Amino acid sequence: MSSIFSRIIAGEIPCYKVAETKNCFAFLDVKPLTKGHVLVVPKTEIDYYFDIEEGLFIEMNLFAKDLAKSIASVVPCIKVGVAVIGLEVAHAHIHLVPLNKISDLNFSNPRVEINQEEMISTAAAIAMAYANNTKN
Image (cartoon, rainbow, N blue to C red; front, side, top):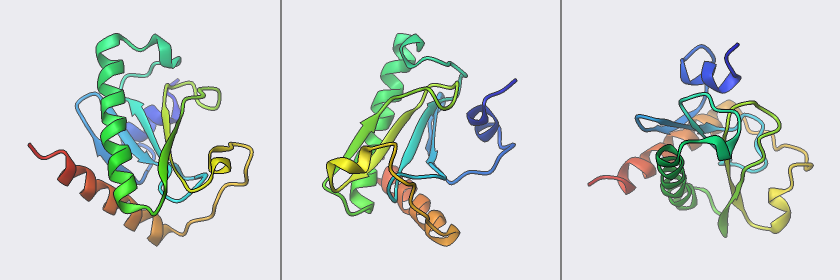
């Protein structure tokens, strides 16, 4: 059975997509810790982050780095925090979370409520920043 992330990548479940490469996909978390919380996943369904093949691991992390810069340019924050937990979905993923205080990266915090229009506009703004930041 495919993970929820594989189903999102395949277009079976809608998402607020922000960017993708040949091997990676990024979208807004629908239950974010803060506005602009992005999930970065490999398109290949791999459960454990440290089981990712080295080339894909490097690609995924460089993709996350570019996305973090894009998020920071759009969402008011001091920094973009990174977390890899891997217990909630059996598909490796990186959380990129805009931070204004250390507790913003506490996964036991209540999730913030963001309306659909704001999710759409945030995803579009991050996508545009990513496209502009990665032009060659």
